[in-house]
Image (cartoon, rainbow, N blue to C red; front, side):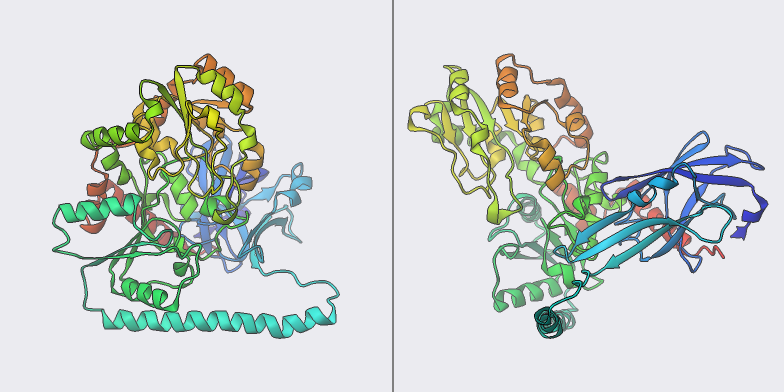
Length: 572
């Protein structure tokens, strides 16, 4: 790169910095002196060694350039490397300028810095903004650091002793155990290195397979691929129950044998165990497309992942459409091109007419109050941090008013999140119109007889939208939920139905049938590239058999090539 900064070809002034979850946005106003305004400009984060570690996405609007970068994944599926960065403007082969801070924005610069807590809130990923010293212009510097927990000021003798003895011993034990497990894993890798066609279906969330994993497994067997591939299973609740050494040893052995591993959620074991490079890890996450943030989308919140985690090892994830792939990419901290729009395999059975007929009969037999009535399904997500303290504030529901509304026309099925242990407080005198269906195994089956879904932030809207039926959203705690969990998009704009913030508003919407139903079709068009029962086949064909569509394969390769090219640029 030719350094032309002293030629004063352009001037770039940062007039605003803002954050959208883990993405930083900069507004840059450009003054053109000796270059055409239409020339493409590129903006790089260049470290002290004059090497680019990230390239900003750019939206040019006249003399303004709007820059954005996801600091948890600037393109290489890792957090932005620690260092001090200048933002350098280029036109391809020439270095034109460094971005400087506009003097009017300078007083607000410090408050635009961010700190993202992780590792049980014991560490913090810092992104600080400052300016260079001893320069004519106020050149912007972006300082990135992953810092440990700050020491206690004036610690007592007891605290000093704990830090000297207990903490190192605890860390040693933890790391020593992991070192032994890693050694055992690589021993198994060498032992089974000749096995080539082993596929592992793995969950750490349950004692049984289900959802997308089960659908893909069943379809492979239907196609006779179990004769060509050795299919093995691993299902244990390791995410919330302590496992035996024998169990962990068996999981390591299965993972070492496998060239392809399908998982359906986070696997804590893979946070610290790096899989063999010849093993491909595929995330078949159960969530369709709700609102709540997960993974790196909620970085800095309690329970968010560390900079290096299981998510970083995914070769691919899946989604319902290309339009929503960006949300999954942000959650996993991988590139959008790696999210394949196969659709959700579990929907294959859901759309099967014979299955629908059979399940409808079973549901009416189990809940006879639904026969001949319009069915309202009340199915919100849980409150709380996780399985251990999951709950729902039933006091927010006025059961008397809801019962009166039902009259002789409606019944209500309550289907609470599986983690909510407390049953719905349905009085005996109201059981002719209310039923607690929380123990019913598959919420999707209930959608067949449902005329109206009432939910809040749950991803159950994904499957239900395919029924082309109305929805209402009871979001009485939207502000609190946004603060504790976060949303990865605007809630009101994305909800495929009317949003109600009080129970009175909800009842009014029910009485007037005010559902804003037109939003449902728009939701379906954006979230489903395929309206068929072929998602499992696409997962198998694209991922297992290597038959990726050419445009997707080209985009993945191009993304990797662009990042390699950027890494070789010299800005000295």
